[in-house]
Image 1 (spheres, one colour):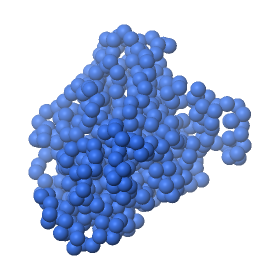
Image 2 (cartoon, one colour):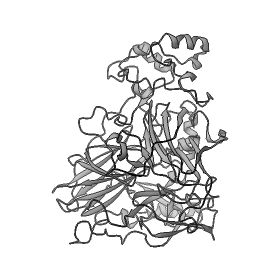
Image 3 (tube, helix red, strand yellow):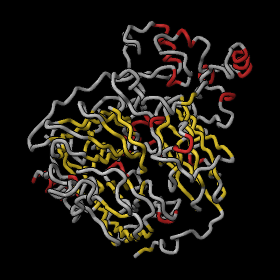
Image 4 (spheres, one colour):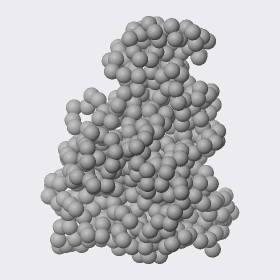
Length: 614
């Protein structure tokens, strides 16, 4: 049984141990309570304004950050909370308004809040060391900016791993002219992961043993095909220091997966009237977990991605990267449904119940078979599945084995491909610095914009892919890019080092420089075997997915292993902007850089957006 209600003994112990007057996390925020929140008043016409009585709204909003006892089952730990709750309060704004968000730091360390996906002056973006100094203990910092967009977003800390200890919450912006697609009811669904081990301790363990939390390494008798793996193949995997089971480096071995702060043992539930059109605002606010989301028996109509409207498209399952948001429209019948959010490695799940009456439950489907990596995930192009390593005979890990460059080039010439199939050939990625932080370079990365997420190739129902997303109508704000910037996602799993182009942020001297208002294409090439959700602060970029003048706008994009994705962006926001993998520990380990847009010029709203400290 998992509950946030504080056990008295645990509570007293926790408070005594801190010796402080920390607030007590005894309640969920109103929006995250089960059953009755987030629906329109009885009898309201479809499309009318949602019930916002449980949300923080207006031009002045006060938030207080503190360490608060948090209980899950029989265990209690200290979480980093906003207004004493985890997740934080729902903030509800309206497009066109001005807002002042007053953040008081009740911690004994610096803190911050980043408004994920919002278009605002860079000084208000909330990234310590990049856009502002951070919020000192005891200080109150006021973020001020005009609200220029609408949609589903969220907020989280950018300080010291606090996001992984609970400092996050939902943010919804209502459009000035009403929703394009009406709904009778609305539910906010925040997916998250929680561990009683602090993020920095998880990172320390991964530095010592990168598979510390992976209990699904293959045995001698297992292979991706489901058949016994031949000894030579097993030895080849070992020589490459790879495992087809390296799907997620932090797993259900330490994480509990939550919906609106509720664990599966006591799931969150939302009520509806049969036949209603229900809008689900789904936010992946986890620190390290990509989720596969589905509601068995209920089709999902995607109507918005990362806050921007898209042409409605029906599907049955969506892989949601960390920090992505999707809005779905569903029309449930007179029965209960289970919303299932399976972690990408299928080591655990978050779930919730949608039902027409209190107390109803739907069956909870079992976890599906864990996925395994294939040759395509290793950047071997479309060379088929990994049902044996015979096709890899021409590939080695020369840097691991000490093979010389001459041998590598000779090998490359012997192949029909443009580059060699060696797994660390610099000729395959000339822009990458071969530091110790790079243990592989995918030989043949391919465009995976239209691919299903990892592990979903074989499911027997529809799965959303990025090429399904399309703006509702032709867009006039797009122009061809004038140049392309190729960024390689690199890492060394053995040392748990992550980087862009082989350089960790601490080693990067130069940011990525853009000229004000220039149009640039970013090509993100994933040379590793893990999916990376990449986020660019301060912009909504145009995903290059073959939709012409209907390309969808996003702020975060999943880049599948061994593949690449491209997006175009107009550099219309001067300033310094964070650009990073949104897996918390990958970002903290170095997969981070700054995009600098110059010259700094006055822009609309900047005069109204100066923050201050009290």
